[in-house]
Length: 315
Image 1: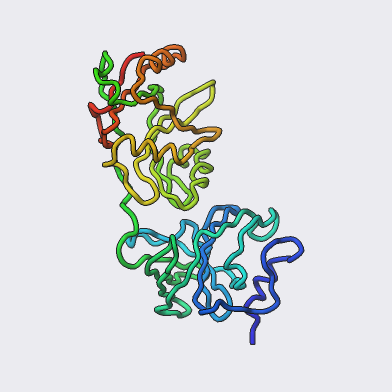
Image 2: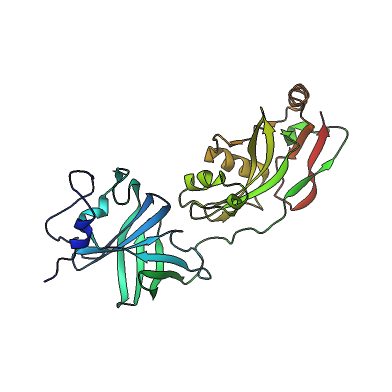
């Protein structure tokens, strides 16, 4: 009988990696376990592993499981892994095969609907991964994974930025607004999916930001500006978060969700905001040489184009 783990063992040295390197096969109680691991290796990807005949049959999925039936994702067949990998997480040393950080993204059980050399249909029952999928082989090690059934998330918003209306005087009811600095930079919407963003084509340093999101989907709204002689991307709104559109939500909800992300780094930060407090913000904007102050209604949804819910006030 062939050794199903021979290729796995040939790529690993048990004295140099914390990964399990067992001598024999094992199985879960019901023989239908799965695990998805988030793997920050040379490039971020997710490893889908389905138990089959004593091993975990594995695919590397660069963008993670598709949430929309209209979009298929690449899945690259890799070597079978031992059952002990169901719970493996940790740091694989750099220089070793698959070097990088690995965490368990989800685990659970699955049902097999079809299994052949070219097609695998299955239903996942996990906390984060749930639903029917099909893997189908295209060429060599390359497969595609397709979600069957309804979409698991709202569609990505395809909108123009919300723009302020110029006003000479602050609103009469400042308690109904939050006040932010007007940065005077260039507007940039940043969509993030599968640890990647199309905005990195123009700004390669955004790849690190996108990768830090892991499997979390988001669309952030911000501005490219120069602070202290360095280019900084300042974020001040969140239009989409983890599969849910926030366009119809009030500013207060979107702002709380943005702050919960804790977006900060060497090239990006979350812009400060001060509800109901115009005069100190205007004074600070003057002292920093900023062009003005933005007043944003606390109850306003995100409205593409010019809106009277956002006001641009002189500093």
